Image (cartoon, rainbow, N blue to C red; front, side, top):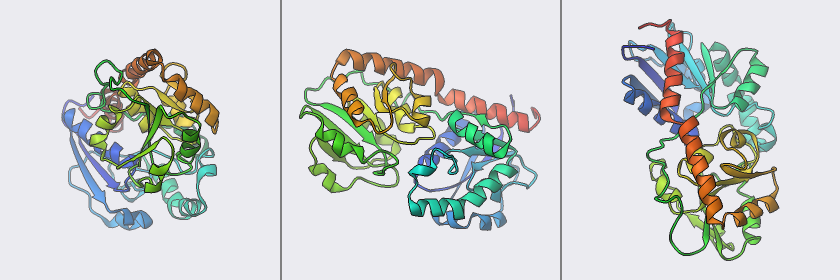
Length: 342
């Protein structure tokens, strides 16, 4: 590993997505490890013409450029090793069915060509899950490293005793954009199947809030969207977390829930099943099995089951998804590219 500080440049487009969260967490982790991480944010509008950023200067004396697949092509090929972290891989065969018509057009015409260029120009490709890595390897015919996303296990931690002590209904939390891809459409149907002693609390994702009329639904409580740093207090107010996403490249919400000692209830799909362990940290059912979700929520009325799954989830978060593990993996990768500079 390098004994002298590295200088890593992180150009990124502020898109209001999990990739923004990753960039901030990576920069913070690198700094805590004693390295210099410089983040350069570009406005979201640049996503429509990322090739124009090729004329943008880079800071002097940079050792590594680290960017997403949407942006990396603009800063590769300058004699500085370029690392791409792929968060979503928009051409993944399992993701395509869940894209809307306009989204598909945008992905195929605008983003697709630059993603291909970035992946082919990168000195190293990293995927946030084996699920994503396998699809890239099949298409690009080159190896892809896997470095899982991580969570701040000190900020996202269990409440005392792991179980909410307040009286009242069982509280289940849904976090995400109100889209079919994220499974938001199952929430009203699911709520109608549950008794009055269960509430589903909905928090919009980084891009979209829930419509206010949802609050009129049975057992549904719509909460204001909050910044990432305030999410631990939201998790501390509930008993379980609902993750009915139909496709997920990784699953930040499931991981944050586990780190907070909360059981996950969701669909047994893609990245969610890579983060969770069905039957141990989560109650996972086949995609679109709403009856199965309702059964899982009813089961969480048992505090003993919530406690066991919550503890198992916390243990798994500490064992597999910590900042120290993620930063160490990226530093090892940087060191390989730099030929063991130290």
